[in-house]
Image 1 (spheres, helix red, strand yellow):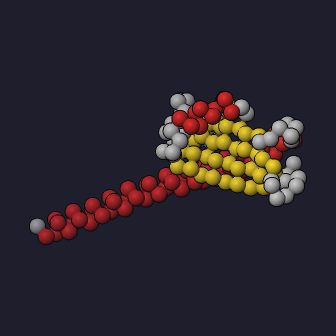
Image 2 (spheres, one colour; image 1 turned 60 degrees about the vertical axis):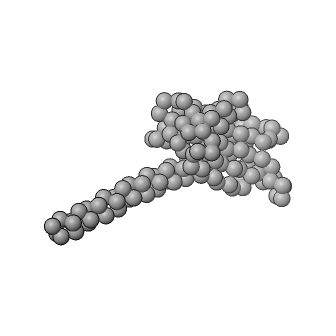
Image 3 (cartoon, rainbow, N blue to C red; image 1 turned 90 degrees about the vertical axis):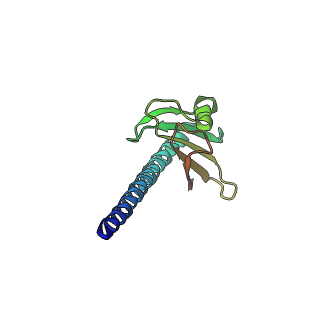
Amino acid sequence: MLSVAITGSTLLAVIGLLAGGVGGARDAKTETIAGILSRRMTDEAKEDMKVRPLPVLPLARFFIWDEAMQTLETSRTASGLDGDFRSGSSKLGASLIGRSQISLSPDLPGVFHLEITIESPAAAPAGQRKVHRYETLISP
């Protein structure tokens, strides 16, 4: 009876560790995806700055991605995906939602401030998603 109790306790501990490991792996995957998408968004912001006239600032873009990092929808207008960004996306397969915004750097002339926000899960309303925020300075 004692050996059954010890075996049962050990199995419960191992199952608990496995569940924690799976959750940690899921969080690490989301962090990695958010990092990759932030680099992609930085490149796209630099391209936007080359194409669009710079006085049109702040320049914002909204994105919705699936779990495989494929873009489901993108918008350059606040009225486009801003509602999805606040209330959650109803797009089938939406996993992450993001926003990039370029503004003039107040301290450095000719340099721009890029703020990137990537949140998951995309279907949850704002405030209930895990937020990944990145900021950098870029020049055209």
